[in-house]
Image (cartoon, rainbow, N blue to C red; front, side):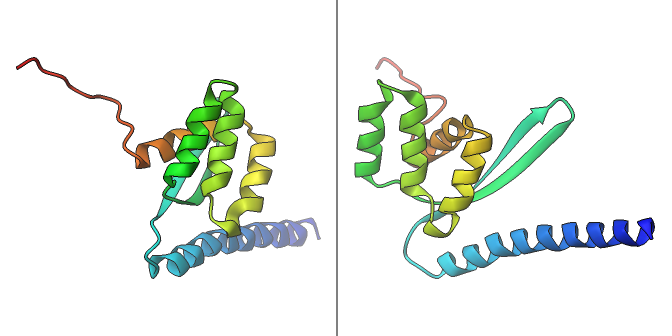
Length: 131
């Protein structure tokens, strides 16, 4: 009896994982046929030394108004600015999933904001040479 219950739980877990993966894939398909620039952002959170969780979100390329709001508010609070920037640009279908993830891992918005800024041209290295 215990073995049967264990198999049911394992199968349910596999089905949930497949459904979640399919959901992201179906969203990718939905947005791939549009003129809108959509990016897949995959981030890995290290919960502890032995556990990692991977999250996949689809974001629109940030518009200048969204970027301007981010720059205006970052001096007051990096956390609030990053959170607003991420929620400004997440696709509507994943807004609730992002909300749940942010409740559990609030610092994830800083990582996501960094990736969104890179879509707008933020670079790690920039070179200058005197002529």
